[in-house]
Image 1 (cartoon, protein in one colour):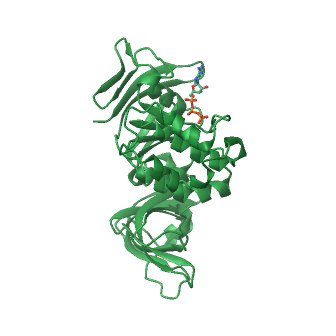
Image 2 (cartoon, protein in one colour):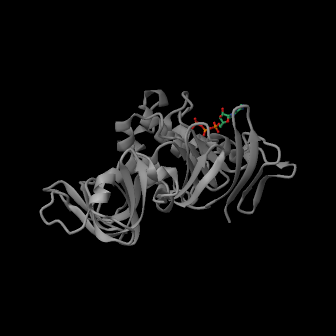
Image 3 (cartoon, helix red, strand yellow):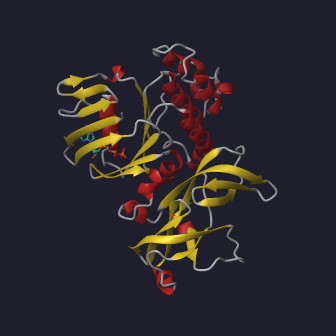
Length: 355
Ligand SMILES: Nc1ncnc2c1ncn2[C@@H]1O[C@H](COP(=O)(O)OP(=O)(O)OP(=O)(O)O)[C@@H](O)[C@H]1O
C-alpha cells in the first residue's frame, strides 16, 4: 500500500522522468534544486496536469492509468501552497469549516480538526478576518483548512517558503507537532535541508528530472555518494525525546539514537519527541576524550566512511550510538590525525539546532 507515480514529460528546457513508490505514512520530502520537477510531480499526483502515459495509484485506487484520469476533486487529497490564499470574505473559522462541508466523514470523525486548531494556536484567531492575520498565521489557517476536508493525502508545496526566517523558526516546533498528529501521508516539497531534517521521515532527492536517492531521511542525508552530503551546509538529523531541562543553565537534555545530547532550552514538556538538526561543520572529532573542553556533547564514535569534498574539506560519516552523523573537518586535520575507516574516536557536537 503506497503512492505510486510514474511519468515522463519533456519541456523545451528539460525532461522529467520519474518512477516513484512513496511511503503511505509519515512525511516524505521531495527535495532538489529549482527546476528539477518537484512541482510538476505534485501536479501530476493532484490531477492538475494530465500527462499522457502517466500512472498514479494511491493504495488500491487508480487515479491515472491507461485512459483513466480521475479529476483532482475526486482524489480526496488536499494541497497547501507557498501562499495561503484564504477566502477574505470569511472568518478564520468559516474558512476552516467551509472545507469541512466537503468532507464525507461525520463532524465527530477521528480526524481531529479541533486538535489541529489548538496545536497551531488558532483558537484565539477564529473570529478574525484572514487579511488581519500575519503571513505565518494565515499559513497556519491554510494548513488546518486543508486538513479539515478529511483528505487521504496531503500535498505541501514549499509551505514555509513565504515566511521570514524568524517566523519560520518560531513556527517549526508547532508545525512539527502538527505533522506528528496528522494521520495521513504528507508529500512535502522543499528547497530547505533544515525542513527536510526537522520535519520529514522519508526523503526523495531529485536532480535534472530524475530521482537520485530515496529512503529514510537520515540514511539519505548521511549517504556520502549523494552530493547533498558533500555540500558546505550538509546536515544530519537525530530523533529524540526530551528527558530533562536545566533551566538554571538554559539547556535541555535529549535522549537520541546517538546518545544523550544537550541543546539550548527547548520550550516543550519532558517526554516530547523532537527532531534535531546537526550541521556537519559543527561536528569535530578527537582521538581521546577531552575532559577540559567547553563542548558539552562528546560521544564515543567510529569513522565509517569519508570523502574529500574539495576546498580543503573532508566529510566524515561517523557511527554514533545507533545512527550516523556527518562531520566536516579540514583535509589538514584529517592528515594530521591520520584518520581512517573503522577508526574509533570521539565526536564533539558543538551546536544543535531545533529550528
Ligand atoms: N507548462 C510548462 N511549460 C513549459 N515548461 C514547463 C512547464 N511546467 C514546468 N516546466 C518546466 O519544467 C521544469 C520543472 O518545473 P517544476 O516547476 O516542476 O520545477 P521545481 O523543481 O518545482 O522548481 P522550483 O523549485 O523552482 O519551484 C522547469 O524547467 C520548468 O521551466
